[in-house]
Length: 396
Ligand SMILES: *Cc1c(COP(=O)(O)O)cnc(C)c1O
Image 1: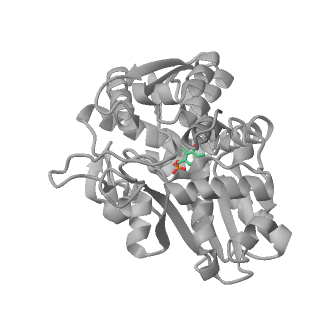
Image 2: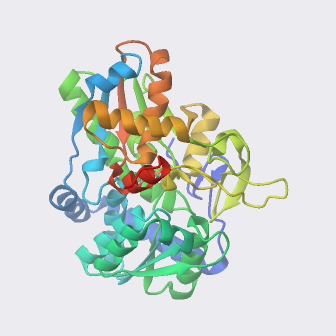
């Protein structure tokens, strides 16, 4: 079965819940994407940029000492942290920017929370000569000053968003408002497998390179396929990117790890499968953290990139079919993993990625000694070092 279906649904999840004015542009985007996907020249251009600009293929690194700390599993990290700009987000930003150019749209807008997707989009726009406007909540701008400066260095306009909780979901609202107004000239680059159809499909396809490479690299290194694959989940793009090629190989266990935050109370975490209910947010139907009246709940995570009240609809679908298992890792365990991986392997992980490896530290034993595990290291932790230093009462 090919998912999503023609209306953009993954079973009960997904779809296009948008104002009338966006139906035609979403159709236009889907048509353009389907043509581009079949066009060899488009594929070649993207592959060449991924190789020579982004630095793909990213390495697969065996981490023996850290694997010992995870119950003695044989652990390999897929090193998305070594991409240009430091995370997997550039795979999608570059793909969509190329697509926009092909569609004749010279203006790009994007939303960003922690700033990683904004930086990736600003980077792709600088490279391709596109105008770039990034919406960012005021609270996030204050927390992530360095990323604001990076975006501006590359010529992007960063627009502060002062409404609501002044964080990611408010920035998305503003970006959608801009898109409705300027849709003739503007492409909206969404940063994860979220939003109305066709976005969850497009972002997934651009990120699926992660899993294709990982499978080929593991076969070369070990002669076999992994027993288990693990990734952290904000919206879910790095996870579905790793898992997509593995979905049809039923012997591989797939495990997604959400942010458990500081506890199970509503507002204290971003674990949509443990605390959420069916709802519609930002154009798609999925699991959403909300109160008894359906108001979107506040979320909390030590990592800004996992801190979103909904989750990609394709994940909601695979949670229902049980093909992917979902668990959570809390702030404290993620911080511990952040330190242990740094000390044992000389790799400082992004706090987001630290959730995947934190889960492995606590649960690796249950996977069986010697089982072959691949974990996605979605980004590098340099951006998080000042925050961790302050949290731990040290000068950065
Ligand atoms: C944005 C981000 C995430 C979370 O987004 P997904 O769409 O769930 O992948 C995870 N890791 C890093 C490093 C990020 O920048």
